[in-house]
Every structure is written in structure tokens, then in C-alpha cells.
Length: 463
Image 1 (cartoon, rainbow, N blue to C red):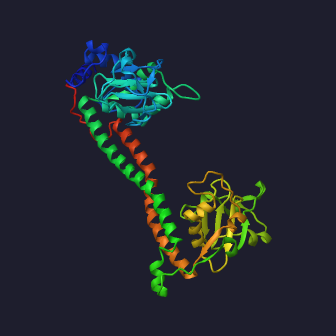
Image 2: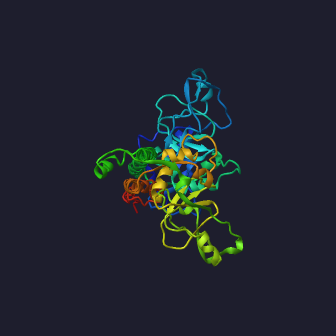
Image 3: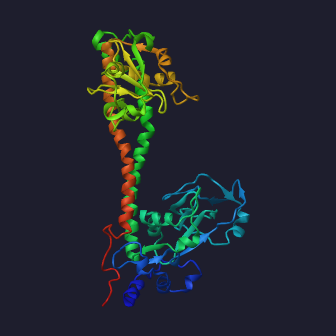
């Protein structure tokens, strides 16, 4: 075993591995021997040409805990825990110390580009690399970790991995704010492959996470424009622009013969969802529709709804019928959906059920209330500053634009088509969580020796 370790340790010698502490006088072999973790303390199995070492045994820590710098409006950038995000170093918030104070402040060590930054609390465990090439100062709650015998990028991703993050969290202390002391962090066991393998892992993880980040960026850009596009097309719909060509083709004129009325004038009935006692709920009962069953697309998808036993005489009064519009009045106020189902169901207590005269298409009403005009009338617009007060009477008093029934159908068809295309985009949004999980899976594989980069010929023992 001793011979195997010596051969493996010699493979780590590399001109790019610069010692950064007093331990520079120790050979790389001596550092690694001293840092080795006993087999019984190794968290999980790794390839045979890897070893387990203590983090503090193969790195140099720069820790400014317990010191508070004098901040200025300009000068040398001060990196705080607020700047350190997972695999990202934010410029904001910008804080500085005076250039005159730099030498007297930075007495515990100077960070170098590529060094790993680790937040010890608030938040615990954010990891990134220093990208600044100029002078920077370090605040509290950040430890700069400098690899003595390895690759810093490998070390960054290693500290980001689910395995190590979980280990660090288990060693943390504090109830309100979780944190970890440098002394404990130094004792953390880490898997340590040959240097060539560290570089291969770092390069491959770089490439894979870059692709994931590109996908995330596209999703964020799409999200930023989605609400704007939706509001714009709804606004056009209720100004007659979407159906201008349709009117010309149908009536020979683009003129709008739209009636201005109120929602109350076209509402045949409104009803507040009933409240039920605990003893009325039963798995054999009638499902109650809740806000959580209503999609942003105005549809209803049941998600294991509560069921109630309703007396026969009340079923007709409570039940939902095809074409009913449901609006949430408490909680997620203003969430809406059209009931177009065949099954028997009733609205929950926090919903208002609306029914309309035959001359009104309920889907058209849904889109009207979802438009910027409708949202503003309900106090739900982006500029709303007060708590919306939604009830049946206030909704009935709202102005309502009423085209012919045929034109309502045309508007609904155009908007449904747009909504369908946008739904595909929303499905991309939902893949954001998948991308996060994929990122974690890549990191977990990388530091278990399962990324497909390990070469068994690296530092192969000579028997």
C-alpha cells in the first residue's frame, strides 16, 4: 500500500501546482501523506487510483473572520458573502476599502485569480472562483481556499457537489443562521484523484455546466418576454385589432359594432362556493375544485381534490356546469378557469362561480378578464398598490366589451392558438428544475469517478 501511494503521489508533481503557505517547504508527498483519511472515515467508494484527504491538508485557507474593514465609496473592491453565489461572483453589491488601508487590512493572505471562495454562513456553502485580476479585499464570512497540490477548478466543483455540500451541512452549527468554522471545514474529507484526472474532470464539468447555463439563460430570456407578449396580444384582442381582417372578410368592413355594457348585464347567475364541515368530507363524495386545480391557461386539472357528501336536494344548486367561470376571491386572488368537464364537481369555498347568458362565450370572458384592462379593473395589474377586493358584486359592476357571438368565437380561437404556442414555452420553463437536477447529477457523478474521464493507467501501481 505504501509503495502504491508513493507512486501515485509522484504523479501529482506538476510545475503549475504552486505552494501558497508555510507548508511550501513540505514536499507534495509529505503534504498528501499527512492529509490522508483512514479507510473507516472515507464517506464513499472512489476509483482505486484516487485517495481521500482532509481539505485543510492539501489547501491553504485565508480567513478574515472576526475583522470588520472600514468601507469607503471607492477604492479597492471588497468581496463579501453577498457577492459569492453558487459558481458565480456578482459585482453587486459594490463595496470598497481605501487603497491606503489595503496593506494593513490584508495581513492574513492575498487572494489570487482562480482561488476558490467559500461562504461560511449567511449563506453557508456558496462556492465560486475569484475572477478579478486586480487587487481585491476580503470581508468576513468568506474563506479563500488555495489548492497546494491540485487543480482549483476541480476543487470548486468538488465543493459544489451534493456529496460535499451535504457533508458540510451536517457539520454546521447555529439555529437561526447556519455556519461552519474554518477548523471544521479543514477536517472535511474530500476525494482526490491524480492531477491529470482532476483537470479532465474540471474541463468536462465546465463544458457540461456551460451548456446547462446556456439553456437556463434562454429560459430566463423567454420568461422575461412571455408576460409582455401575452399582455400585448390580449390588449390587441379587446381593441379589435386581432379580428380586423376577419370583420373585413365576414362583413366587408373593419368597423367595430361592439356593445359596451357591464359584466352584470350579461351574467345570469353568480354563486360563492359553499363551506363544508369536517364530517361532510369523504373519499366517496363529489370533488371540490380548488385554486390549485386551475391552470394559468384557464383549464381545470384535478390534483387529488377533497371530496364531500352533498344532500341530493343541494347538488343542483352547488354543482358546476360546462361553461361556468371560476374566479378565486381569497389567497391567489384573481386566478380563473373555465369549467368544461363532464364530471360532477362543486366549487370550493374560496371560489366564485359565474354563469352567463347565451350571447356570451365564457372563454371570451376569461380572456377579457385576463387582459391588461380586465386585470386593472380587478386591481390585479402590475401597477396595483392596494390589496385587491374581489367579490361577485364588484366584478358585475365592471365594464364589458361585447362583440357579436361570432366574433367572440373568432377572438377565442386566435387567443387559444397563441396560448397553445405559449404553453410549449411554459413547458420549457418547467424544465428549469430538470436542469438544476441534471447539474447536481453531473457533479455527483464527477466526484464518484463516474463521469467517464478516469484513466486507470494514471499512476498505475507497479507491483
